[in-house]
Length: 312
Image 1: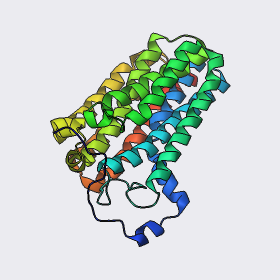
Image 2: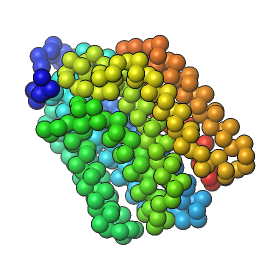
Image 3: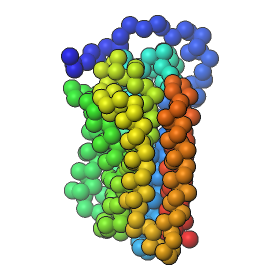
């Protein structure tokens, strides 16, 4: 049956000493998952560089977009920590980065409240953006973000558990943040912005794919039907490479900014992705935590290459 219990299945409890050995500050930092925040920060940085290139860069809306994006991702990470624990996708036997609730570091209800407060802060920051564009459009985007953050792992139809995680990441860590960040600065969205938004969305999908390859067995046991659970590890690792290549292809408008051979710079990025892909194919279990960090690093490499072409 596809119906999932909302209660955490039986598992061995976390020893009190393990929970006590982590300071509250480290527990909250771990729960925020700073190693993945490139997925929210890089789209804003890239869009702001595009606005700079168009001579429409505005610091205040760009900073607000960065706050909204990062706070929304942290809220999503905290929410996932809580709901994955409740649904049994995260337990004390987890092979990935430790989760605060499953490890006994933070009480479940405290984590839930923290996710809601963080999401509220993101929405408050978003309200200030209403002064920089069409209020109906910006409010619609805010509502979509507010609904998607909890709906990713909660509710009657948790998107991540039904195989929609990749699509959500493509939209909310690529298309939406890049296009909105550019829009509140330039008042429009260009074709170049749209192409770059898809490229960054695809690179963020790769972060999710590493997670899903690593957690395939545990996700399957918890009824979390990710792309990797549905189609297998080989499909997931192949999709990782496809996303990287497509991201380079979608970056084609940037190739005309500094001459005919600008595209060669993106081969540097692709080389990093190929090395990371090789590690993804050969490693398993907790060893893939390093691959997750490298994938986030690669998004920064892509973004910095793009910024160098647009700004300098």
